Image 1 (spheres, rainbow, N blue to C red):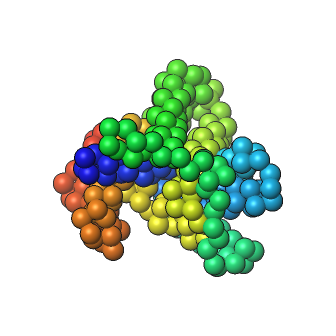
Image 2: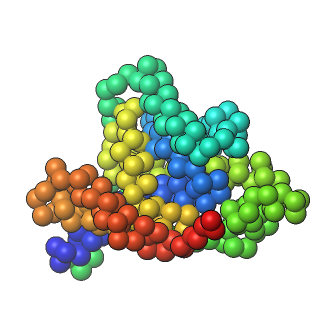
Length: 292
């Protein structure tokens, strides 16, 4: 019973990682960019929700505003920082992403202060716990798992069945050929950033409901763990990101349950090292052959 309880807790945390990892995978699949500013977009989403709820406005408005704010911020970053460097060496994009990450963290610290702020999580999801066959399952856990499954299904349908999804797949395969076929490259890339940011905004709310505080560095470690999840599942693979997120969440909770809570971060990054050594493409990543 204890094992099942910890598994449920791990799936809840893993679902949040999965939502964030999907953003990493989508952007990498399109322009081969590891967007390390993705975690800080989550931090901004958390602050937006916190400020709106603290002002006495409806939590539903806070959720919508958080997602919308993340989308707008991601699109601005893409246009201002990444688009001018699209033809530059990949390392330039990577360094720029890291720079944007530090910029967002420092701006948040300058405006809102460095001290953590308590997030009113019960205002978003009521603090209710159900006992099912001896297992204690909170409403937050149920909502988190449900949102993750629905988001995964909606994203899969978007990519596989819609015109924009086909454009995204075409651009990820061959940007030049897609452009010659009449696909608007800029619009497709911006749309990809927007979808990833929307998932980040949802993930921000769910993460703050589990750990009810927000600070300027909230998204730093969260983003890195989501990146590990994306690599573990196979970066560029949507189902892989989901699987990797759940695996990381379960691993983290198991380590904590065994009494090694101070080692959770070390274990997560140890998993990354092992995966890169044994199977660099991850669980569901496709092998890529380069012609010389």
